[in-house]
Image (cartoon, helix red, strand yellow):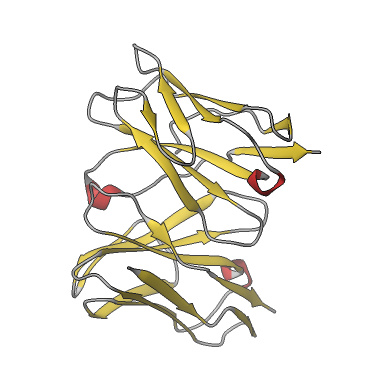
Length: 111
Length: 112
């Protein structure tokens, strides 16, 4: 079973920041938080991951709370092409590093 | 750079027929390989993963099987398809268990 809880859907205005929350209250000390997104009918796309510290790359920023029980993915300037289902995944690097997907958040970016 | 290929892109098969889906990765060696399935309107479910040639781990009991005959080739098979096998099948690779996974374009299978 997925170890994360996400809102099923969110809206965001084009050009504004999209903040996608994720709860992972049972995360273990050696588990990472990963974010993927899936645009309709395509394979999931890796976005970012982190363990304890906040992370930033060219796509997004990941903010992890100090107790690691929740995190937020930030798309700083959302575009229409960011409309997708966003998956927050708690991943152990054991057992082949498998990803366990939940239902994700369907983000709709609107003009 | 690395690329991952899956074929066919779409497939319509009758119940009881065999299945073979192929996934190949270019530009890397000894990757971890994964098969996921996504049923309509649902999240992805891991079916199999492989950390090396001939090494297959199964995550869920089913009538599907996987094989890794070559380092960068991963095959998903079935001897007799069921209606419930319909879905979107995705192959993914990662350098190791510690690295992010990259997904292929997927195969959409419809069993009639």
